[in-house]
Length: 76
Image (cartoon, rainbow, N blue to C red; front, side, top):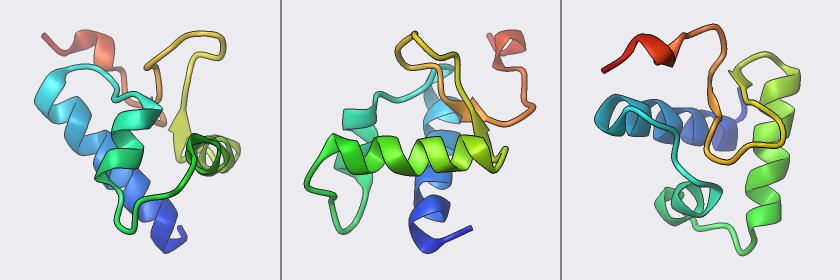
């Protein structure tokens, strides 16, 4: 993973652990250092990570990005 991908991974994993749902792309952007200037850069990183099967998401739905292969539906 690239340093940026590693940072996004940690943000998503921690957010899921703390809130039982995915963060929005805006929330990911706000937690990154240095903070990306656009949400498009977050989208590109997440899409690249999905292609690498590091993350997965339900396309067409908001706040569904998660660590690949982990079933968060069982968390409650």
